[in-house]
Length: 503
Image 1 (cartoon, rainbow, N blue to C red):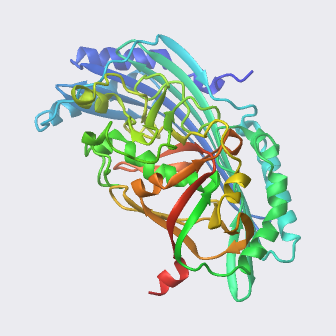
Image 2 (image 1 turned 90 degrees about the vertical axis):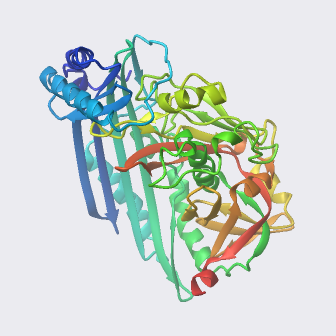
Image 3 (image 1 turned 45 degrees about the vertical axis):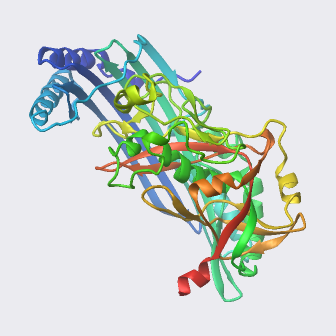
C-alpha cells in the first residue's frame, strides 16, 4: 500500500499550520490558509541512445494566504519552522492591509464545508522516484537502440519526465488535508529524410497520473508503438500534400484532447469570463451572460469537468482552497451549462448564476505561487452504445482521419483556431487509403463543435493531456487531462500548411 512520503510527514506540519493561522487571526485576517509543499521532478532525455539531459529538482516551502479588509495577502518562506510560518503570516497581512487602500472590488469567498483532517493519494503503483536512475536510462536506451536499428531512422529521442507532489493544506475554516500525487510523461520520437523531405514521428502515449508501471506495460503498449514508428514515418515522408478544401474529419482522441483543452477547457474558466485572467492568454467568448443559453455544439456534445478521474493529471482529493474534488457539467447536449470555478469567482457570480459552492478548480504550482483558478480534467463524453472508430471512418465518403497532436493556434477569446496533427490519413468511400501531409484544420469554436455529427462509443474513449499548461502572471504551469472518444465533424475547412507558409 502506498503511503505519504515519510520525509514530508516528518516535517512539523501541524505546528506550522497552528503558527500561521493563529498569527493571521491575531492580526485581524478574515480568512487564512497555509500550504506546505514538496515538489520533486526529474527529466531524462537520450538522443541517439546518448544521454543529453539529466535534471532533478527538489523544492520544499510554505505559503500563507489571507483575506483582510477585502484584499488578498500572500507570502511564502523556505524555512520549515513555526517561526517562518508566523513571519509569512505577518507579511501576508501587511500586504493585504496596504493593498486594501486601492482595492475597488472586495474579495469574497464562497462557503465550503469543513472537511476535518483528510488524507488522499493518487492512483499509482510504483513511485518513479524509488526506481534507480540507471534502470530508467537502460529502458530509454533500449527504446533508442530498437528505433535506430531500422536504417530508415536517422535519429531517435527517448525521454521521460516525472513529478511527485506532496501538499499539506490547512485553513481557518477547520479543513486540514495532506495529499500525494505522481505523474509521468514518456516520449519517443524518430527523425528521417526521404524524397527531399525531413520529418518526425512520435509516440502517442499521453502523460498520465500513474507511476513507473506506465513505462513497463500498465496503461500503454509501448512495444507496439515503437515497432510502428519507422513504417509510419516512412509513409508520411512519401505522402502527397493535402489539397485544401472542406472535408469530413474523423478526429482521434490523441488529437481531439488538445482541441478540447484550448477551445472548451480554457474558454469555460470563469476567471477569464470575469476578466481576472486576460494578459497571458486572453479572456473568452463564453461571457457570463451566455451561461445557460449559448449553443456551444451539437446535441452530441456533452462535456464534464472532473477532478476525480482515475489517473487524470488534474485529479486531486482537495484543491488549494480546501474544496473537495467534484465532477460537474460544462456542456450538456450542446448547451453551455457550467463554468470551472474557484471560491472567489463563485462568490462573485452567485447572485447572477445561483451557484454558491466552488467546484474545486484552485491550484498553485509551487509554494512560492499564490493559487489561481486552473483547469479540471475537462472531457468529452462518449455516446453509450456509440460507433467504433472503424465505423465512423466507414461512414465517410471523402474525408481525413486525424491522429496525434502537434501545433495549434487560437485567438485571445478562444474563438478562431487552427490545429495540426501527427498523422493524417485520407478517407475514400469509407476506407483509409494512405497518409497526407501539410494538413491543418481551421474553424470557429462553436461552428466546429456544432459540426460534430457523431460521437464514438466508450470503446474509443481515451485520456490525453499535458504536463504544463501555462496561465497567470507571473506564469504558472499546471497539468490537466482530457478524455474523449473518436468523433466525426462534417464539412470542416482544411488548409495546406506548406502553401500557407509560402504566402
